[in-house]
Amino acid sequence: MELRFGGAFVEHCRRPPSAGAYSPGQEQAPSAFRRHGLAEALASRGRTIRDHGDVASFRWRPDPLRQQAMNLEAVCQACDLVASHVATAIAAQEDVLVLGGDCTVELGTVAGAKAAGARIGLIYIDFDADLNTPDTSDGALDWTGVAHLLDIPGCEPSLARLGPTRPMLVPQQLLYFGVENITPPEAAVIRDNAIKVISREEALSDIEAAAARAAEWAARFDCVLIHFDVDVLSFIDFPIAENVRRCDGLKLEDAAFVLKQLTGLPQWRGLTITEVNPAHAPDESAAFARLNEVLAAALG
Image (cartoon, one colour):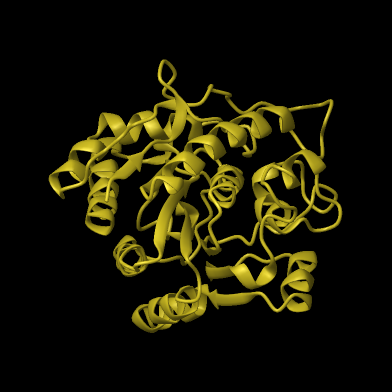
């Protein structure tokens, strides 16, 4: 099976948007992955690669005219293009790797998989729940991605209707993994909708059992997508994320184990990586060498 490798961005511009983020930097991630040999690492593991280039770049900036949903139009445009590539790949029974960018890119991945007619299960590996709506957030749309997938009341209609169905997902199609930072409004949504959660504490205490639980949950779906926000990692252990919280997150080796287990499932079809900020790596070359090897080992 071929791997359709692409941060889904226009060929002449190797930067995804950081439009939905808190600051610039993530728009540099796909070019850094490429520069440090991700394609070569994947090819060395026997993968056939189709790199579809980059969507139009948008560097994060304050948006005083839309303070509760900053840079909304740029987020929608990027997600539409990602969705188009993902739909084509999954319809052709190819695997998908999407390189973000901020967390809103997952809206495009899910919308594309839905357009291909897939019955989706989404494993959301993230320190944050991203279940805020613009009125409970602080203006950064990457804190609202899952809320828009589920079409929680208060969402921006232009994001919630990106897919062929609205909502794009129902709560039973979502599993959180490694989540820790949950606001009171998010906690209420999780409780009221009985959304499954494997917490950071559970993952840290027994990573093998946590991965096995996630794999068991995923078995009911035809198409398993994985969202991997690198802020789930301990920033001290592996400083690469947009958010520099000194949280006691997963070690890179633990995340590598989980990814390898989940991408090995017969239902797995797509991995989206988000919130990588190359500027936060003390040694960019060494950091991406480690990260690329993790991805190659999981996807190969």
